[in-house]
Image 1: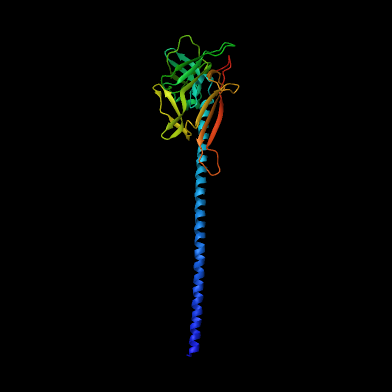
Image 2 (image 1 turned 60 degrees about the vertical axis):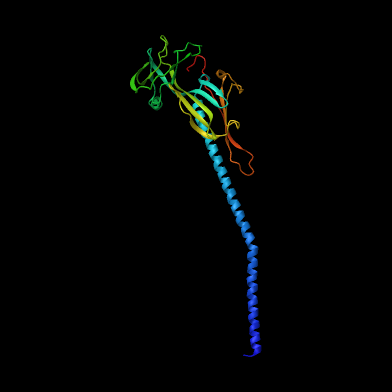
Length: 300
């Protein structure tokens, strides 16, 4: 091979190697430029996922809080709706105590020694089976003289209701009847034919358990108040006005005289999870429950 040809071959090889080095060098430059961009894209994607997770948690928290508020409202409205002003014992910002109504029966007869014979429908069997010592029976003199307000008499129930039997109740010859043991009644009182309200002392309160605040419900029997049962929560704390209860009169003004109360106003608050751009720190439910009146001379 001639020297000229060998020199030309080496030169061509040199050009080929130089071309390879240039190609590899260009790829490295691309990688060096792309690496920060890839890192930036990955960081942005991670931040997006984190924010999405935060929004999902906030949405779940808010949904859960609203669900708890709805549950609390349903429980309170169910217990407060049948009440009359005289059924309420006390109200404060964080507590309401009252005689919750279990049901209404018709009085068939009384035993001065301490027993009521009452009639009710088959559908009343479930709640009558829950009657216990410490519950209250509210009775009225019957019939009520025209133009006179009904006079209520209360007596404590001393035990569970007896099994239902068929018997006479007033003019009806075949009625389902139960017997409720009670404290002795004063002689000469006329109650037969009147409705009897069976009630239980009940209390809703805003209470703390551990680090959280809750809406709780408890009832009283012959031995005292039972343990508090959580109804809804967690609510905001006392300083955050997690619960506020007020009695208002017919004009909508707050009143301390429970006998003149026309409605009960309740407001509940739960803490809202903080989200970007959101200024609200809590969700709330505010509602009013009208109390039942007793017209003078009318049926209780």
